[in-house]
Length: 110
Image 1 (cartoon, rainbow, N blue to C red):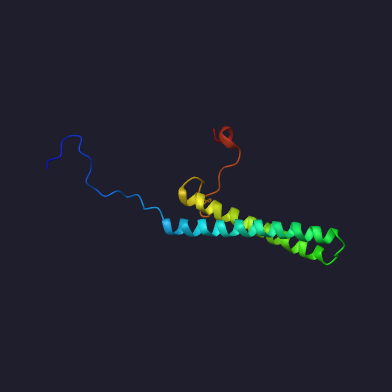
Image 2: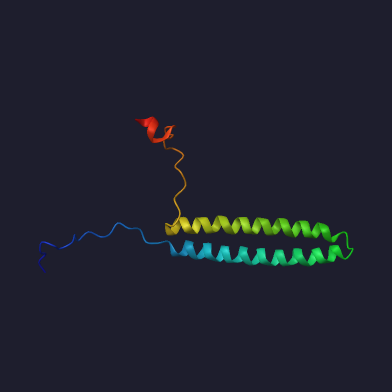
């Protein structure tokens, strides 16, 4: 087959394939941490009702469940940000080896 004027190049594309296995692992991690967050919130509410009923030791369990829920939500957000970076929807982190930006903005550069 002969190529005409508008024939494209025969080179293979240089675009890297999307890492589906890593995205699947991140999606599973996000799902697990969000489910754990929901469970811990539910447990904290239940312990809160028990603590208000007069069980003073339940306040410690409310605090522990709340801290666990905070940690789970934070981890889920970190995993979600990583997934968005892989998909290209979020900017990559700044390069630590890059030279510092000049201060003062566009007007100071003139």
